[in-house]
Length: 356
Image (cartoon, rainbow, N blue to C red; front, side, top):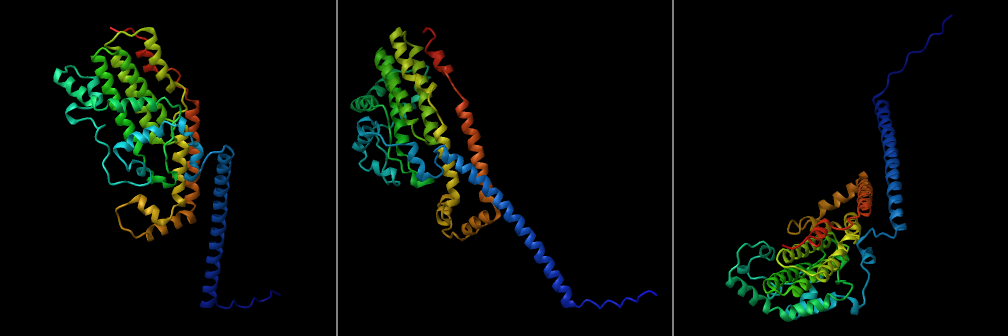
């Protein structure tokens, strides 16, 4: 005989709520466990990539960057006489590396507006005697300055007092000054060509190339870009000289030797490491510093950045972003190492063609 099943008791509201609560807690535990596993997975990848960088002795923070920009003996450091030269007219110039200073740059190196730009003189089709006189008067005031500059550039190395601890607020006052010095050397070369002083023009071109070479020693992307611009200006000035004067074999050799350094220089490699360290340092910044970097003149309240940083850490965005940065810059560095420019095409062209 079939056994009669007792009727099921109705589920009370409290039991139904308890089941829902336990089900919800179970789902949360599963999600939390999965998220923890995901964060641990990202952390493992990030730690592996960082360990590989440390094994290659590569800096990962801005405070470690000085290892790519080691100290130089004063007697070998071109920055020492250059800073002395600039301090003669701007006593507070060395302080600019620490913080912005309310003081105008030296005015004697500035090219008067009526003269135009240095690059403009290289492509002028007509120049009056009044123009040449104005140019000569401007350069006459810089005669002793040019001599001191050439003496400084004879030193093999260059290291300015960069403060890497400033991070994104690093001050680079010397970059503008080096560009001004190069512009005046370019103008001096143009005047030397007009005056038929070929050797002096060659000295100017070589000095411009030396300015670019010394700046290229800095592990900063902006320094590498400006260095490339100075080098191009030296090549264009050399082309101006060759288009107007016939040079001897020895003179051509001097130009080629002075400008050939760019062909073998490991450009941009150290700069990429610096850029990577700067970007990775964002998540280690305090909310106050992060707000100041994003919006220096904005609302001083940093509470929003506290939430932003916390969310990036909890969500895994910080680790995922770090992994992306480490992988991307590794690929970029690999490309720079594989790139061997050899003999620069422009350099090869202008220093081997016959003058008109």
